Every structure is written in structure tokens, then in C-alpha cells.
Amino acid sequence: MAAPLLAVFGIGQTELIILCVIILILFGHRLPSVMFSLGKGIKDFKHGLNTQEEEPEEPPTGKKIDEKKSAETVPADKDH
Image (cartoon, rainbow, N blue to C red):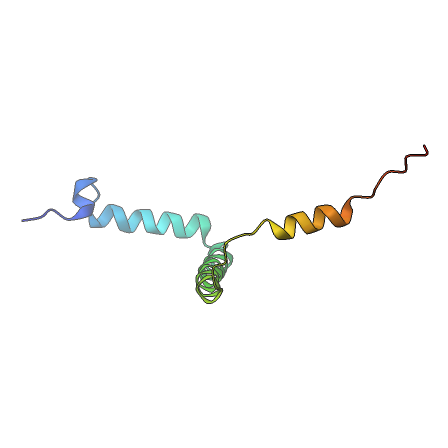
């Protein structure tokens, strides 16, 4: 028979309830903002996964870099 996970840590039901009440008392006023932030983070993460799948993967080419460098380089005057 497998032992419950909480029994492995030596925490019973009574201790767990007391711990939850203490956490609720200490952090009760922050819970709405924490849950909002957690939900927003999960939503953004899922959105990031979906947008990554929609974009085709194109290997980077050196042409764009070379074109930018050649456009930025200004030939020096030899008269200086």
C-alpha cells in the first residue's frame, strides 16, 4: 500500500488545516493580486506557445546582416 504524500513529510490533516489558516491570515490581503498575476502569467505563456507554433521556422540567413552593414558603411574620402 502506498503511503500518502503528506504522511511522508510527517504532516497530518490537522497540521495542514492549521498551516492553511495561518497562510490565509498572513497573506489573505495579497491573494487576489497573486491569483490575478498567476492567471495572467499562465495566459501569456499559453499565448506564447500558440504564436510560436503559428510562425514558420526560417533559418537565419547572412544576407540581411550583410545588407545592413553595406548600407551603414560610408566610404571614406581619400582627400583627408
